[in-house]
Amino acid sequence: MTPSRPPQRLHEPSNGPASATPEGLMVRLRRETRADHDRIEALPFSRAVARGELPADAFATYLDSLLALRTPLEAAAAMCDHPGVQRVWGTMAAHAGVLIADLRTLRRGGVVSKLPPRIPLALRSDIEATAHSGEAGLVGLLYVAAGSWHGVRLVERAVRRMGEVRVDELRSFAVAGPAYADSWRAFAQAVDGALPPSDHGLAVAAARRAFGHMTRALAAATPDPRPKLTQLRGTDAITGRFEREEFDEPTAPETPAPSRP
Image 1 (cartoon, one colour):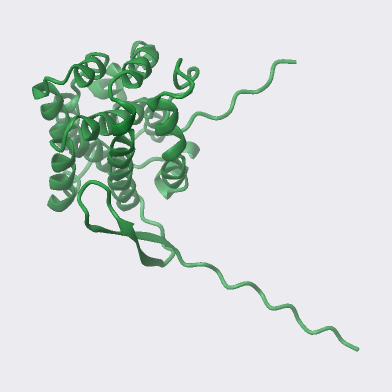
Image 2 (cartoon, rainbow, N blue to C red; image 1 turned 90 degrees about the vertical axis):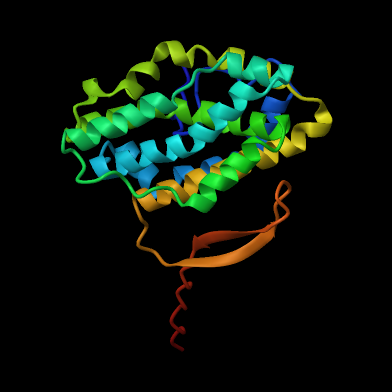
């Protein structure tokens, strides 16, 4: 009997092994961002995608979150002359212009009453600073950008099912087709050879920062009504600033009724 395939995740391709090098950077990136993947999969946004019930406004915010990551990243990658970064970037394509065009299409067609609220300037500036922090930061961000683009296909199915958006008019769905998925293996091989092992930790830290920004943006797209608590989670490896992390307020366990004698 053929074993069943695991469900595809929103921010991770499912078409084969992560890397041909068992101990390469791709393996470490996947391992050390696993919790970040899981946080995104647990968001109300991701659950709405899985149900095929993504409203147009949430979809517009999703596109804007991709744009916030792609705009500074694509500019920095194009200007970087580091050979490893250029090999990684050479397996990808620039998509910021496609995202802008689709956001305008949604606005002109009256699908959304207004463009989504802009990702906070502080977060956009932080992504830009990470992109220009060096080749390790760039590779970490490219990993998140490449993986998140694979999730566009899952989002397309949810948007198409809702019927609020004329999907065939959007360019981002067209460029995220099967041909793009086939490029993942070449991307993984390029990442594995991009940096010396001494820089792998910085790449992981940059990827985790990008996941944090995506998580906050997608959480705003489809808010969770449960209250949140905040705690400091330590000093960021790139900026040296303390990072705050939100988490669901735990539900108090039920106290069992005393047994009757």
